[in-house]
Amino acid sequence: MDCPRCHSSEYCKDGIVHGRQRYQCKGCQYRYTVKKKSDVKSSETRQLAHDMYLEGLGFRAIGRLLKVSHTAVFGWIKKTGQVAELSAKDESIEVVEVDEMHTFVGQKKVTVGFGLPLIE
Image: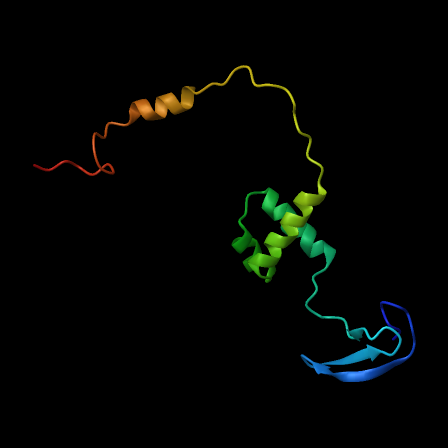
């Protein structure tokens, strides 16, 4: 139960926070708890969340399935994205095809409004 900062074995009790005993190091005055939080998820759960995200599930759906908060899932995915080194292409784009967009816009037959029928 040494101090996590200076590894000193001299400490004293410093109250209870959220049901866990808190200690204060006499050497560096650092306050710490010894009991590990039980809500820390394993690396397998994080990897499963990452795989689910790559398969197309949303953050909230992943959170419901793994029984964690969606903000935790977002943080895991964000951290993974920051660590991953994405290759940036410096090549210029020569040809852009907009055929699908032209077809979509050409098929719209609505003259006004949001597609509601015109009634006189």
